[in-house]
Length: 77
View (cartoon, rainbow, N blue to C red):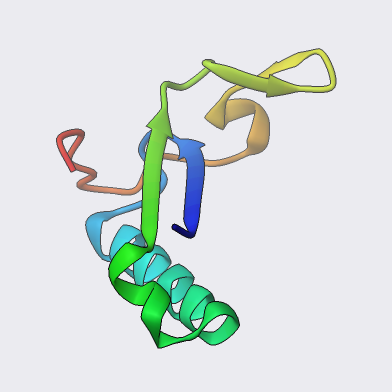
């Protein structure tokens, strides 16, 4: 089963963008593995709380990256 797990800072993706990521990733799996992979493809788009991730020994926040949450972001999506 093809599987992709994307993690993004909380609040930078709206529902439409998450759907686009899921559809495009599934299409990539189908292109690579064939149509038979479609029903078995799994794509997770997860949001990580601000400050809950880092790289190179530095905790990252939206402010440090110069980003702002998407306006109207529904935290339940």
